[in-house]
Length: 84
Image 1 (spheres, rainbow, N blue to C red):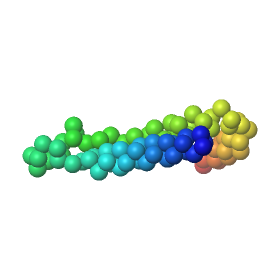
Image 2: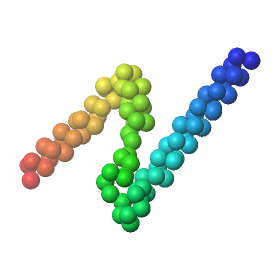
Image 3: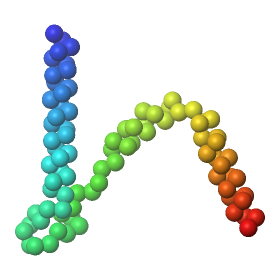
């Protein structure tokens, strides 16, 4: 029962967060003072909180050896371009 209550409250919280973000997105660029123009102050800035949360969770478990192939390919391409 405790699990069901926790799950129901989590779902409701997620729904409220989604709804608030949706409303914020709909208000982005709306003419708040009804002067016919959308000014910089009336625009909502883009949020990158989801990307920050994703990186915060993944970064500690990321293996640096995954990037060694990419780094060596970039070095190879830069060496090839320098010779021409």
